[in-house]
Amino acid sequence: MSKAIRIHAYGGPEVLKWEDVPLPEPGPGEALVKHTAIGLNFIDVYFRTGQYKVPGFPAVIGQEGAGVVTALGPGVESVAVGDRVAYAGPLGAYAINRVIQADRLIKVPDTVDLTTAACLMLQGLTAQYLLHRTFVVKPGDTIVVHAAAGGVGLLLCQWAKYLGARVIGVVSSEAKAELARQNGAAHVVIGHAGLPAEVKRITGGAMVPVVYDSVGKDTFAASLDCLAPLGLMVSYGNSSGPVPPVDVSILSAKGSLFLTRPTLSTHSAKRADLERMAADLFEVVAAGVVKAAVHQTFALQDAAAAHRALEARETTGSTVLLP
Image (cartoon, rainbow, N blue to C red):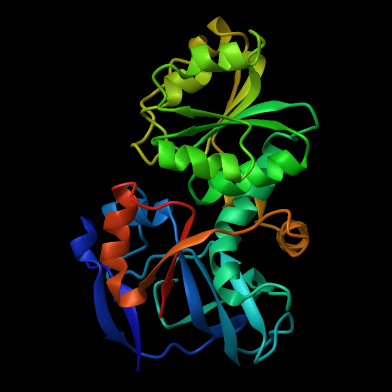
């Protein structure tokens, strides 16, 4: 037997139940991983509440983890028993042991500990594609990053600064503003109400070519107003709720703007892309350019408390669940 956090219905943190489950057995192309650490992400809240649907109940949520391979199914050649691995994507991370398609696993270099890897995969790979594929950030660019003191936000601030960009970070408190500054934000704005005016002042009226917005409903309109003509609005999360239906004519009225809603699953669907993205991520981590900030840890069985803290915006940086 093993243990896992499961949900039997959508709802608040109280639906997260710590339960006995059978020890899974890997099938063809699969590996059994014993978790060392599991990443907590806001997308977990979306699956818990039903904003995103699980395949069926009972369900184990969670999309990011790291650990050691303990068994292999037939036909697996990409990893071996004993390998230190991490992944992001497939549901099922809130468990001591889980089975996963082996081609979704990335071997963790010795230079990176597994706790760091557990919170780096989803957030770090997200930062990688946002900065290198969704919009190719170049030296001299000025960009806006919402939730700049959050897990992805801090990584975006650090990595974008390394790429030569100037980051305008948006946060909700002075404490979070200081954290964003320490991680590479050149300017920090507290709250989004006056954000376009602040961006106009900081850029001398030029505005910015891209806004990275993981907040959603509360910030969408302000984000559009920060963009220069032909700018790109990147909506990659909805921590404040989903963005209401948009009249696309607003994009032309505000300067022939572009709008995208990217996902990690699309960008990493091909094994070759996943390997390239992970290699890029681990390279900047090993060089000390990007540092994962694990600011909170919870026991896996206390996942409900971790969700409450996340939803109350009481967390900064990354949070990991420890089996």
